[in-house]
Image (cartoon, rainbow, N blue to C red; front, top):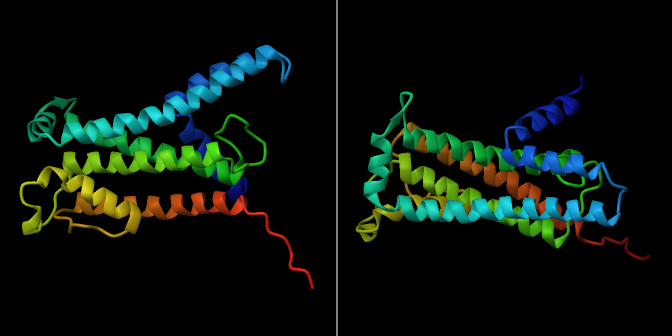
Length: 226
């Protein structure tokens, strides 16, 4: 097995961890019962397209609500004090958020590199407005998920004096700053916060490359006339 085939298989395995994958797979099998482009086939295809958009936008709305809820100090303390199988509820949520972030990056890499992990699997990647908007929606979702992680488990060196009274927003400010500048707004106070910040910078670099490639593919480059 060559390296490209191995990477493709790993992407498929990670994609299989998503609940969306299994629901979409169910509708995909239903499509096979009808002739391509027929009315019944198109009905199912529309359901798959709606499901994809609903899942992506739903995560964005959920991540924004989580950041709002976690800005309440009593909530984060309660989550840290509640344990499940030896792990605090805050730890469990952080792991779930990181898994979702990995899923976003994995799916986009699958689409760009191999034309997989998408509804029109196997076809050439087309940088339509819908594709780019959904990619940017994922980008914002990850930003809010990282903000939620910082709010739950992040620790920063003493915040600036002008930031006093707004410490609950530190996680959101840190995430926004990292997402768009790839640089931290506040210095991490422990190894976990440093590792999370580093992973966010890596995500931004890789994802930014993906989005740029989508925009470049929209260009109609023609050779200059002599």
